[in-house]
Image (cartoon, rainbow, N blue to C red; front, top):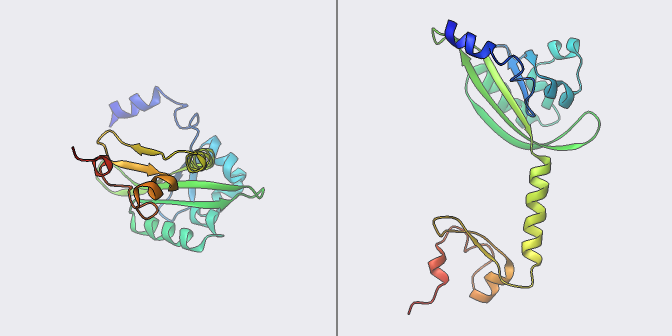
Length: 178
């Protein structure tokens, strides 16, 4: 433990320099500490942070808040993706992952929470999908194993398949047998 503590002490700004919001949660779900990105994302001062249970930050989404509260109460990992409205009115695509934190004797001491703003990534992915769909040609994308991962509606029409039904199938399905 002492050696691990020394290793982490060599990186005092590791958590604070993250572009993800990172919080240490107490067993009751209250926020013990968080990094600069979390303070920016949730727009709460130190006093508000300490008085606000983590699930309450998502009260506008009762099912999200309830899932977080249950996971915290049970000391279980949980991952959620949803659209959240920030205090300034911005709509933000969030991905939240909470995990239990155990001490050396495997006693649950609290939870860690990592919150990632996926807005730009999801917006770019949507633009890409729209560009593929608008293409004047049939477009098929496959992964390294030759499995179809994306088609546009023209592909489906040309090959006579229902929309989106080619995804997950091998590209060999569309190659004529000799």
